[in-house]
Amino acid sequence: MGYLSERVNYLRGFADGLKIDKDTDMGKLLNLIIDVIDDIAISVEENEDTQNEILDSVDEIDERLSDVEECLDGDCDCCDDETEYAEVECPNCGAEIELDEAVIDDDKGVIICPNCKEEIQIEWVDDCDDDGCCCGHEHHKHHDHDHGHDHDHHDDEE
Image 1: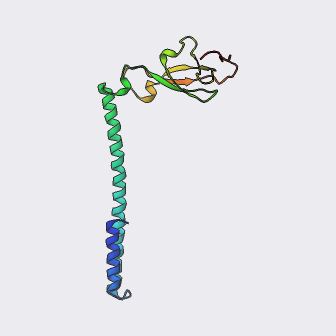
Image 2: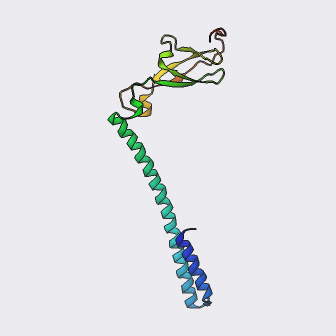
């Protein structure tokens, strides 16, 4: 309950304490005035809640816009010349594997899971347009892997 609603409740209690007969014209008028003030208080409190939600959204939009501005200015982390990497989940054992593009055999796109030693088929695609990034750098993500289990086991490789 907000401050205005508390004040309206105080008025209502004060009016009840005056012992004004609610059936008289004066009593009816006083109750109607308090009801209108209560409706106004509820409306103001709802508007304050909506305004706070809007302000939170504006703050979030402002933060995102700052990130975009940094990227356009070349000051963002996404455009660093550091090694690009991807996380891949092994379809066989579920292990999370962090890969950099250098470990992928360009001809086959195959890696060996360090956990279960099964082959994982990898296809790299450019997703820069999907993320709306326009920084000019290549960004990659794991796109597809083979779920087949007919691969040779490599138990002796570590």
